[in-house]
Image (cartoon, rainbow, N blue to C red; front, top):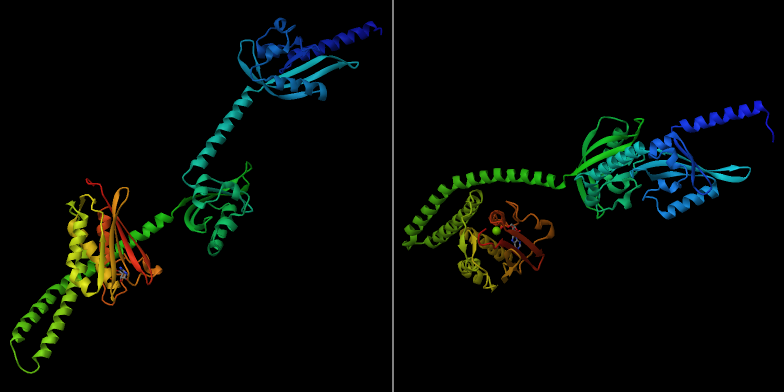
Length: 492
Ligand SMILES: Nc1ncnc2c1ncn2[C@@H]1O[C@H](COP(=O)(O)OP(=O)(O)O)[C@@H](O)[C@H]1O
Ligand SMILES: [Mg+2]
């Protein structure tokens, strides 16, 4: 083909135009021959990689390869260029000075009249983009780790109440794994039927964009128990500020609530205890003068030998024994309200139990109760308040006796545990119905016509003060076992 001179001129102008565009492109561009040998590189390329045009031309594109590009990757890249006519992707390249630079690379083959002349590579520096991506990833990981490690329950719901966020604390409290609940309806799974309307209302308010709210409600755990959670709620929004769901952060206050109630209850008992003590104190003096006068009267008529004195004597006996009983009751009330602080001294547990059994021996025989006392003689000397522990065993053995009005067996044995000595006291009495078992230590709880309900309350108080523990197992009609664990650290 021959070109006229005007055509030649136009071609040259156009070539200049293309060259100038190539040279001034802000993206780095190289052109290679079919073997990947660089035949042309523009200004942006030399700026980005530090090779001069002269150095680059004649070199293989391998001079750009960093250690991050594996052989397989390189191979696949070139295969893709030849098969699909193009490859684009993010890779890390190497500069002349050895430093690395992340780039977005596009490679396209160049053809002329069906023959492959070579390739063109365009590289865009994406260092900034990578930096931002990394920052975003770190921020995401950071917030995810906060969500995961938070000691609060964090739950996210979409507008259809499906669970989209469920952190580790949620798993811990509810017993469900995240995978089990994601996508499921929060209300179906966790909200007990009877609190649903209230929680419904809260959810609707939150997703209607009302101010962040707080409320408490019970949730169901996997095992069917309920936990009381205090929630702070706020709406989840997308980048356009449209509400996409609700976010709730909760604290498990089950224990706190029961503690609160215990404190309240304890305060109530303290008040009642004070009142009881006051009453007991007030009747103590008149009671002792009744007792004294009755005894004087008994002496007085003791010598009489006339009609009716026997009857009078019997009546007096009855008065005296009733007064004694009331005395014992007031004594118990006073003990309860004025339990002194414990005074520990090195003592032998076994001795104390033996003393109590000795003290009650006659009553036990009278009530046809046999005693089995199997002790481990190795129980070491321990630090405790002897008088108060005597009171403990006295109360428990008395209760056992009262539970076996027709006789039975009392078994006492000791057991060594890790950091404590345990004394078990078992009777073959009436037993305690399951529904009252957790109330027997509550002050004033009694099932007896003339009981004070203070015996076990006193026992518990004393054991608590010694840093010990008391528990009770019982079977109706079979008997009851009390177990007392006392810390055996000598220097406790
Ligand atoms: N060994 C026992 N067997 C059956 N019931 C018991 C036994 N010990 C305690 N209880 C129950 O616990 C209640 C509370 O005991 P306690 O505090 O000693 O008060 P009280 O003996 O004055 O009733 C008793 O009324 C009784 O119902
Ligand atoms: Mg009692």
